[in-house]
Image (cartoon, rainbow, N blue to C red; front, side):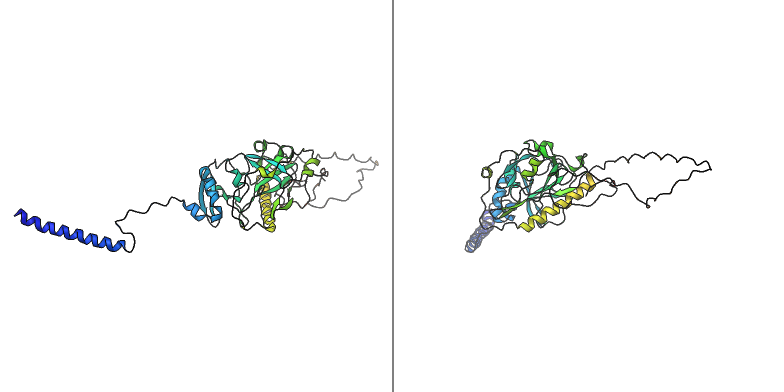
Amino acid sequence: MLRRCLVPAFTLALAALVSSCAVRGAQDSIGPSVYDDAPPAQTMPSAKLGLPPQYRVFHDELAEYGDWTLIEPYGWCFRPAVNFVAWRPYSQGWWEPSDTYGWIWNSTEPFGWITYHYGAWFYDRFQGWVWQPGPVWGPAWVAWAQIDDYIGWAPLAPFDMQDISDVPDGMFLYVRAPQFVSSSVSTQALYVSRLTGTRGGLYAIENLDRVNGVPINRGPDFEMLQRMNVPVPARVDPTRFRQATLPSGLALPDEADLVRSSRRMLEVAARDLNRLRPNLDVPPPPTPPAPAPPPSTGSGTPRVKPGPSAPPGDTLHVKRPPMPRGDKPGGKPVGSPRPGAPADSTRR
């Protein structure tokens, strides 16, 4: 009885094995089958695949210093592993002068040799400061400004960015002119909210030049600083700064784009100045003593010759003394007066 039961079962198992081999043989002739091992997992990160081929070298160099995040419409951007609350670009390092490029940012951060000389930084409300790759090396992709004897700088946003977010402490960092040339400039730089001693308006520093076909802003003029009694250090050799190997033939930025982006950042700086700079109360001018009454004529009430009365709403305007030559570059001030500013203020 047992033997009669086992024979049909063995026959069915043998038939199933033969059918399975036939199916697998047919599938092998047209490609892999469900019996083959699964293909290896994709080890290349999606950020690297999403970057244009010419920028994938940046992905490899920056991988250990942060992560890449997709921000539309600007594509894959690098976000460094830093304290997002206290950190900002162009804050860890110092400025060095060169005859070729003007002022070059020398960063102390391991990712700085790429992110401060290629591409653009911008502040995202959700991701914080992120960096978008760019095609060409520059001394520093920043906008420059001046308030009284303070020199300020801020990273240029991507050229096609129109709506620039407010940064909690303002977009620019400022430092007094004598401290600008110091190697410890990063420890002395201030937010606009700390500029308690300034009364002047905001002026753009546009010292434009073109090097190897690339438009740049050289920053504060050496002669201007010397007129402000700021000794400019010895010039450095730009070739000692490391550069990435990128494909040739990449589109270079246009000078008009550089100027437009820089002036857009200056508008943001004026906006920050109006909303963040302390509003110092200026004491009103002392009230002059009342004139002595004329001598009495002995016939009752003294007669006083009436004089012209001030028009309604007239206020006292105090003319500021001229600033020393070289304290501010030429050009028109940026921005508009802050509501409630004192009448003698030159804030713009």
